Amino acid sequence: MEPKIESRPAFRIVGMKYHGKNEQSEIPQMWSEFASRVSEVQNRVDAHATYGVTGNYDEDSGEFDYVAGLNVSAAAHVPEGMVSWDVPAQTYAVFSCTLPTIGETLDHIHRVWLPASGYRHANGPEFELYRDEEFDPEDPDSVMYIYIPIEE
Image (cartoon, rainbow, N blue to C red; front, side, top):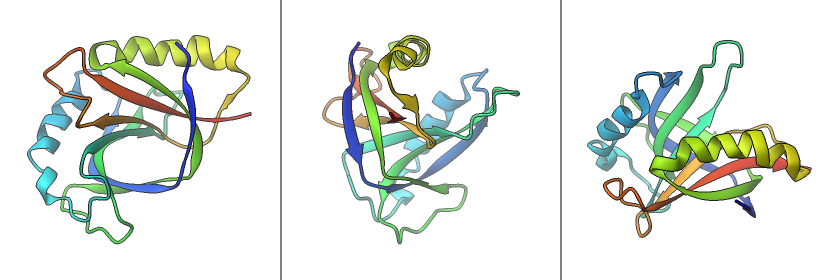
């Protein structure tokens, strides 16, 4: 499982936020709710992609922030009940996986690949990228991408 290394400019996500440990599958439930509200998000930059952004991980509690959202222009309006999250310009290790293998892939990235890679996890959020032409939430074999911020 070797990643592609990719630099990305800063971007902004607007979407619904979850804070916790995802012990009761709250994130998939939030995605369902967000899907019904996608049309409320204005000024989309990429009409064919959605993002799951993860950050602010607390090692003591195991809690983190997660935003299911869309890439928008800097001047985008934030609908009620949603948030805006600015993702900084960074270099990422990009891994492909499927929805059923996301947990296994993340575990491999953090426990195996990253320690042996020569890179360190950079300060900044990780994110999932779901491209419409490659990802269908009803198809367990469809492809998604995990972006891990790295530095040497």
